[in-house]
Each structure stands twice: as C-alpha cells, then as structure tokens.
Image (cartoon, rainbow, N blue to C red):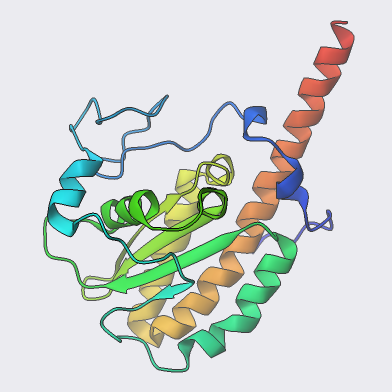
Length: 212
C-alpha cells in the first residue's frame, strides 16, 4: 500500500465537499457517472423506489457488520475491531457498514448498498460520513454507496480495484481475512484523497486571495 500520511487525524473533518470538482457520483445500476443528483438515471432509468419495491422501506441500522444470514464466524467483529479502530483514529468521522448477503438476480450489491444508505434509520449526520459496502457472498461480488460528505474522497477506480482484490482474497482465505485486507486498504486511499483535497483547497484559497 502507499505510505500513510503524517497529516492530522482530522484531515477529512476540516475539508468541505465544496472544495471538490470531481466527486464520485454514479448510478448504482449501470455505473454511469452523473453530474448531479437526479430522481432517475438518464441512461438506464434506475430509481430508488425500484429497490424499495423489492426490499421494502425498512432498512436495518447501519452497523459496522450486517450479517443477517450469520455467514461470518461469530468472532469476526472482535477480530476486525482493532483494525477498524485504527482506521477511525486516523479518520474520526468515517463510519463503515459492511453487509454480507446472498442476493437474488437482478439485484446488484451496489443497488442494495444504495438502498441501505437512503432508507436506513440512522441520523443524517452519521450517514453523511458512512461508506456502506455490500458483499454478495455466493458470487463474491461487492458494491458500495458513500454518504454525501465522504463521497468526494471516493474515487471509483482505486476503490473498485480494492474491492476486487478483497473478494478474491475472500475466495482463498475467507471473509474475515478479506475484511482485514479491506480495512488496511482503505486508509491509504483516503489518505491520498485527503492530501489531494488539501492541496486543491490551498490553491483555491490562494487564487481567491490573489483576486482580491
């Protein structure tokens, strides 16, 4: 992994989403990148209410681990706690929700993640900094949906590569080991994104000062 920044742990906390010009907003069905939030995708027509028709309107709370089918070993939460705590010390506002399910086609992991993010009964402020990742445990697929505050730090390609490596590791070593790899891989991605954002913010501030 890339080296970890020595920046202050609250780097993300201090940066406004307005400092970004290329946030990762995309359709959870066809993965088309969008320039703004829309009621339906202009390419494939995906709508949140289409998910609600299948899943209903009562999503569970966005806990760290959602395992409705008890597919994980009982000690998984305890095993992952140290790595998750290290990640949250580095990025204190970040929250993760890792969901493990078997999905009936045509529902995709990123569609379920999107539904969870938009219908879960969590407070708005907490959800804004949450990244929900759904793992389809029978097909070893994954998809994610970020809250609006953390979304500018989520770049599609590196996160897709991370999730692909995680699902491959799950096939050979099991989900707990794969989740340890996920938690270790998230930190350098967010560190790099926050460093770029800080540089961009400084450029914007300098340009604004020069125009006065």
